[in-house]
Length: 178
Image (cartoon, rainbow, N blue to C red; front, side, top):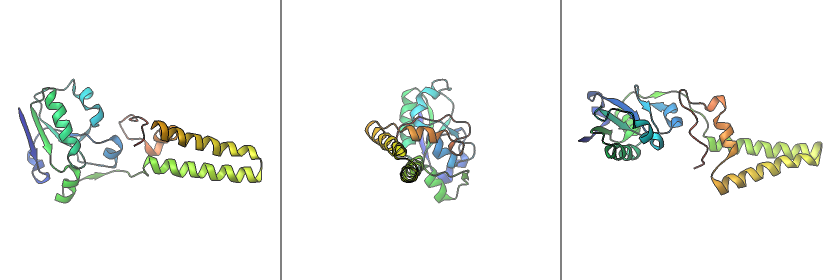
Protein backbone atom coordinates (compact mmCIF):
# COMPACT_ATOMS: atom_id res chain seq x y z
CA UNK A 1 0.00 0.00 0.00
CA UNK A 2 1.36 3.38 -0.98
CA UNK A 3 0.61 6.09 1.58
CA UNK A 4 2.73 9.19 1.29
CA UNK A 5 2.75 12.94 1.73
CA UNK A 6 3.40 15.59 -0.87
CA UNK A 7 4.27 19.25 -0.34
CA UNK A 8 2.33 22.04 -2.00
CA UNK A 9 5.30 22.79 -4.26
CA UNK A 10 5.41 19.17 -5.47
CA UNK A 11 1.65 18.81 -5.94
CA UNK A 12 1.66 19.45 -9.69
CA UNK A 13 3.79 16.38 -10.41
CA UNK A 14 1.30 13.98 -8.80
CA UNK A 15 -1.54 12.58 -10.87
CA UNK A 16 -4.80 11.41 -9.35
CA UNK A 17 -8.15 12.58 -8.07
CA UNK A 18 -7.81 15.55 -5.75
CA UNK A 19 -10.24 15.01 -2.87
CA UNK A 20 -10.91 17.98 -0.59
CA UNK A 21 -12.36 16.74 2.71
CA UNK A 22 -13.33 20.16 4.09
CA UNK A 23 -16.97 21.22 4.46
CA UNK A 24 -18.99 22.42 1.48
CA UNK A 25 -18.94 25.97 2.84
CA UNK A 26 -15.14 25.98 3.12
CA UNK A 27 -14.85 24.46 -0.35
CA UNK A 28 -17.17 27.05 -1.87
CA UNK A 29 -15.10 29.89 -0.44
CA UNK A 30 -11.77 28.69 -1.79
CA UNK A 31 -10.38 25.56 -3.40
CA UNK A 32 -7.75 24.16 -5.71
CA UNK A 33 -8.60 23.74 -9.39
CA UNK A 34 -9.89 20.26 -10.14
CA UNK A 35 -10.59 19.39 -6.52
CA UNK A 36 -13.70 17.42 -5.57
CA UNK A 37 -15.57 18.25 -2.38
CA UNK A 38 -16.19 15.13 -0.28
CA UNK A 39 -16.60 16.27 3.35
CA UNK A 40 -14.84 14.08 5.88
CA UNK A 41 -18.08 13.17 7.67
CA UNK A 42 -19.42 11.61 4.44
CA UNK A 43 -16.15 10.28 3.00
CA UNK A 44 -16.51 6.60 3.84
CA UNK A 45 -20.07 6.43 2.49
CA UNK A 46 -19.15 8.21 -0.75
CA UNK A 47 -15.88 6.32 -1.22
CA UNK A 48 -17.54 2.91 -0.84
CA UNK A 49 -18.09 2.80 -4.63
CA UNK A 50 -14.64 4.08 -5.65
CA UNK A 51 -11.87 1.99 -7.21
CA UNK A 52 -9.51 0.99 -4.38
CA UNK A 53 -6.46 1.24 -6.72
CA UNK A 54 -7.24 4.72 -8.06
CA UNK A 55 -4.65 7.33 -7.05
CA UNK A 56 -6.18 9.79 -4.56
CA UNK A 57 -4.66 13.03 -3.30
CA UNK A 58 -6.30 14.04 -0.03
CA UNK A 59 -6.38 17.63 1.20
CA UNK A 60 -8.03 19.91 3.73
CA UNK A 61 -7.32 23.33 5.23
CA UNK A 62 -4.13 22.50 7.16
CA UNK A 63 -3.60 18.73 7.05
CA UNK A 64 -5.42 17.32 10.07
CA UNK A 65 -8.61 16.20 8.36
CA UNK A 66 -6.74 14.83 5.34
CA UNK A 67 -4.62 12.67 7.66
CA UNK A 68 -7.85 11.35 9.20
CA UNK A 69 -9.25 10.77 5.69
CA UNK A 70 -6.12 8.85 4.72
CA UNK A 71 -6.48 6.58 7.75
CA UNK A 72 -10.16 5.95 7.02
CA UNK A 73 -9.58 5.18 3.34
CA UNK A 74 -6.59 2.94 4.09
CA UNK A 75 -8.83 1.03 6.48
CA UNK A 76 -11.28 0.54 3.60
CA UNK A 77 -8.57 -0.99 1.44
CA UNK A 78 -7.44 1.99 -0.64
CA UNK A 79 -3.83 1.48 -1.62
CA UNK A 80 -2.73 4.53 -3.59
CA UNK A 81 -3.14 7.49 -1.22
CA UNK A 82 -1.22 10.75 -1.12
CA UNK A 83 -1.81 13.47 1.47
CA UNK A 84 -1.19 17.15 0.73
CA UNK A 85 0.97 18.30 3.65
CA UNK A 86 -0.27 21.54 5.18
CA UNK A 87 -3.37 21.59 2.98
CA UNK A 88 -4.73 24.76 1.46
CA UNK A 89 -2.75 26.86 3.93
CA UNK A 90 0.52 25.43 2.58
CA UNK A 91 -0.66 25.94 -1.00
CA UNK A 92 -1.37 29.60 -0.28
CA UNK A 93 2.11 30.02 1.25
CA UNK A 94 3.74 28.24 -1.70
CA UNK A 95 1.97 30.43 -4.26
CA UNK A 96 -0.22 27.65 -5.68
CA UNK A 97 -3.21 29.10 -7.50
CA UNK A 98 -6.33 29.00 -5.34
CA UNK A 99 -9.80 29.60 -6.70
CA UNK A 100 -11.71 32.02 -4.46
CA UNK A 101 -15.38 32.13 -5.27
CA UNK A 102 -17.66 33.70 -2.74
CA UNK A 103 -17.44 34.71 0.85
CA UNK A 104 -20.55 34.79 2.97
CA UNK A 105 -20.98 35.80 6.55
CA UNK A 106 -20.65 32.68 8.72
CA UNK A 107 -24.00 31.15 9.71
CA UNK A 108 -23.42 31.80 13.42
CA UNK A 109 -23.01 35.53 12.74
CA UNK A 110 -26.05 35.52 10.44
CA UNK A 111 -28.09 33.97 13.26
CA UNK A 112 -26.88 36.67 15.66
CA UNK A 113 -27.76 39.42 13.17
CA UNK A 114 -31.24 38.07 12.44
CA UNK A 115 -32.02 37.24 16.08
CA UNK A 116 -30.86 40.68 17.21
CA UNK A 117 -32.90 42.40 14.50
CA UNK A 118 -35.98 40.36 15.42
CA UNK A 119 -35.64 41.17 19.13
CA UNK A 120 -35.13 44.87 18.38
CA UNK A 121 -38.09 44.95 15.96
CA UNK A 122 -40.27 43.09 18.49
CA UNK A 123 -39.45 45.64 21.18
CA UNK A 124 -40.13 48.61 18.90
CA UNK A 125 -43.41 47.13 17.62
CA UNK A 126 -44.49 46.30 21.18
CA UNK A 127 -43.77 49.88 22.24
CA UNK A 128 -45.49 51.51 19.26
CA UNK A 129 -48.39 49.16 18.48
CA UNK A 130 -49.17 46.28 20.80
CA UNK A 131 -47.53 44.41 23.67
CA UNK A 132 -48.35 41.19 21.80
CA UNK A 133 -45.28 41.87 19.64
CA UNK A 134 -43.21 40.86 22.68
CA UNK A 135 -44.05 37.31 21.58
CA UNK A 136 -41.43 37.78 18.86
CA UNK A 137 -38.81 38.24 21.58
CA UNK A 138 -40.11 35.24 23.52
CA UNK A 139 -39.91 33.05 20.39
CA UNK A 140 -36.37 34.21 19.57
CA UNK A 141 -35.30 33.68 23.18
CA UNK A 142 -36.79 30.19 23.26
CA UNK A 143 -35.08 29.38 19.94
CA UNK A 144 -31.71 30.44 21.33
CA UNK A 145 -32.21 28.36 24.49
CA UNK A 146 -33.24 25.37 22.37
CA UNK A 147 -30.19 25.80 20.11
CA UNK A 148 -27.86 26.08 23.07
CA UNK A 149 -29.32 23.03 24.80
CA UNK A 150 -29.56 20.71 21.78
CA UNK A 151 -26.95 21.97 19.32
CA UNK A 152 -29.71 22.30 16.71
CA UNK A 153 -30.55 25.82 15.62
CA UNK A 154 -33.76 26.13 13.58
CA UNK A 155 -32.77 29.63 12.45
CA UNK A 156 -29.38 28.34 11.22
CA UNK A 157 -31.19 25.56 9.33
CA UNK A 158 -33.39 28.14 7.64
CA UNK A 159 -30.52 30.52 6.88
CA UNK A 160 -28.40 27.71 5.38
CA UNK A 161 -31.11 27.27 2.76
CA UNK A 162 -31.17 30.92 1.72
CA UNK A 163 -29.89 31.62 -1.82
CA UNK A 164 -26.81 33.53 -0.64
CA UNK A 165 -25.68 30.54 1.44
CA UNK A 166 -26.23 27.79 -1.11
CA UNK A 167 -23.15 25.92 -2.26
CA UNK A 168 -23.24 25.00 -5.94
CA UNK A 169 -23.52 21.25 -6.42
CA UNK A 170 -23.77 20.37 -2.71
CA UNK A 171 -26.84 19.76 -0.57
CA UNK A 172 -26.98 21.40 2.86
CA UNK A 173 -24.86 19.33 5.22
CA UNK A 174 -27.06 19.50 8.29
CA UNK A 175 -28.05 21.81 11.04
CA UNK A 176 -25.69 21.11 13.92
CA UNK A 177 -24.12 24.13 15.54
CA UNK A 178 -20.46 24.06 16.43
